[in-house]
Length: 212
Length: 212
Image 1: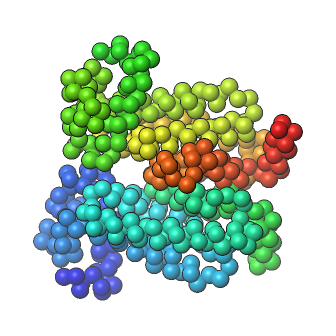
Image 2 (image 1 turned 90 degrees about the vertical axis):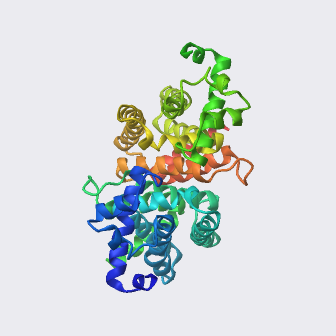
Image 3 (image 1 turned 180 degrees about the vertical axis):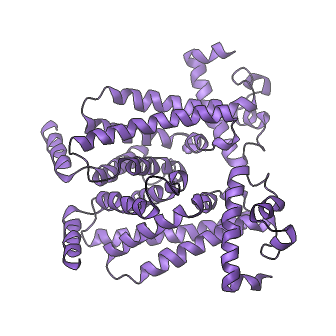
């Protein structure tokens, strides 16, 4: 059954299952959610759902890994191809923010609820989150070494960035006054304004004017 | 018994009870936590604990109101006495951030877990949180009308502020590399850098030099 996860159409179906399950688990709590509840919400039979998941016990861990896979594939890995550190930071914030707005942020909130995991699962999720944190902080350290960062502590600054982005999962609603793209661009503006030196931002703005 | 909550020594004891209960509820989950668990952690008998609380069912709501009372008394009310909008914003961010670092942030995290409340309790907590949100956003609107704010959406900016501050509850640890005061000052620096126009901040810095 694991092999089914690899093919593209099943991946899309799995993504839908994970997002729906995350929303139900958030609303009802993990203990009160049954596999039946999830199957019903998806319009599937319980047996049909078991083609995609190994069981409720593994599901929470699978959802968290799915969320962290998306973060790797859509944010961290494409960012690594951007040579300029400031452009890389800008891309990271915008693409991560847009990822969080998907599926009402349920997966982002769940990824933080590691207490329901086994100790071994918890260690794995914590290690993956730590790798992403370190990647962001290394980028801020690089900007600091280049004299492009305000005089801020890069660990605290990384947590501030993640706080602004992850908090989106608690307030952003599709169909609200701002689109996901607009919200992402507001966060980029506020975060870069708070982190980068004005001269660096001015140079960047100049660059944009030349480009456009 | 409710009358006991009013005298000062009982208030301190109540605060300790709420902070400890919040930490246990966060670790074990609300359903799995018994009044006995909380009494044990406090070194009290169950009967002794019942002098302070009406029961487990009311406890979660009481803890949330306690957290929002602290926010009013230590952050929102003193802020209202500060005439200058920028100084008021600075005080709000710093004092709110320091409040969140208390008791490993358990109360801040719990205040967001409204799903375990009754609908009527949930409405009350949501209304109190909304009032604080509106107060912060009105302040940003005031700064914007004075031409002192960057060109940002004040709703998104308010959520960014709250995200940075509330996220502290997830990462700050007493005895870590930064003290609560240092962390609060980093958040003030990053938030004001992201929100205020450079000329406004430069004027503020000049003011500080004159004062010192």
